[in-house]
Image 1 (tube, rainbow, N blue to C red):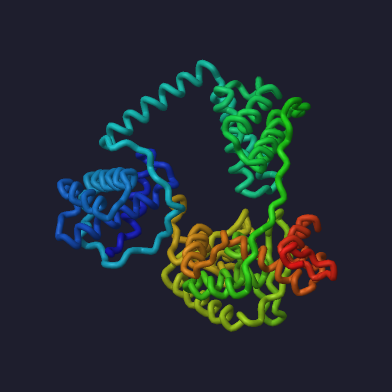
Image 2 (cartoon, rainbow, N blue to C red):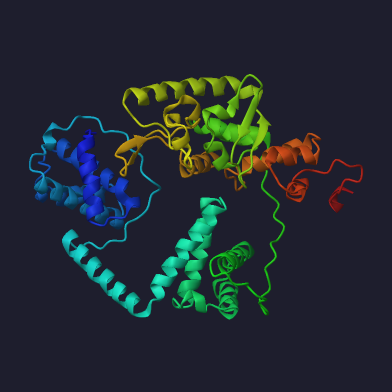
Length: 461
């Protein structure tokens, strides 16, 4: 595929911002532009000729792209035509043959209609103006926006997980819709009671979802509205049923690993060999590994807790070989002038060059780079969780394993196999990073009893 110059990419992103395209779709629009330029080169079409666009859309149909994807591609190319008209000096025929590596965000479908871009912008603008006028009359919309900003601030100041912010915001937005955007200051426990009853009776949500909604609204009332939640009579907190996790045998784990390609096979070996959560594994950086002492340090695990676990000796050669490949990739990135790895919080202000230092690089770097429009630079992220999950799902299917195995199943198997090997429960608790030993006790139900009074089936009497 053809390479798009960085200057053209920056101009294209700037035009996306000007046309009010949500930032989460920017990399998707760039992908469609790259496909279009490659299509024109392959079939000897002129990139600036808008009459070629229907042929490109027809090609997407043949490739079984969805209607939403076709509409998104149509808009992306219209924006490219707009860029060409505003910049007549841009000669796309001089584009190189290889594209820069840019990483897209998780796949999402655009909900725009198939109307021309200019008409859609006018429609969106008129709708936005109408909504703003309505909000100005009631003042309610502004109050909710302020409430969501304060909710975000309260969660961030406590250093809660971004996933917590996402889930709490979702539940607060749902009660906003349920109450028909009533002023948040006028929300009462009766509204909460009706909402929770609606979830349980009408929506039939699970016990965990109901409790999550309760906790989100409790946090919202206490820390955003600055009011006590009060007693909610008539709504019974759902009790979560005891869940016995799925556990794989060692043979099944080996079969899954054999059906995985590099580096996903190494990810699975660390998930099982060290009992890691998926996000803990993918967030590992080079400095987390101490090969001399055979120790792996997990920083900022669940609950922002650190812990150490022993590295499996059997995969030490694979880990070191992988480390050399990461080193080669990092050197290549530096030679090409990229800005290094994504960093957390404000650590780059304290250590100016840490993003480019090898010890701060991801142990499982993404295959392609991410373009940052705000700074017009390329950075590297770690492997996407969804890519690992899909790879594991395919491997489980190929291995013909009749169990519902996910990435977290390897962590369950780690704990169960240690317990089966007569490790004490407190040691397993420390290795898993559990705050309460009662959480670890669930694994006593995943292994066969070894006591003299072993439970038997009546058929075996």
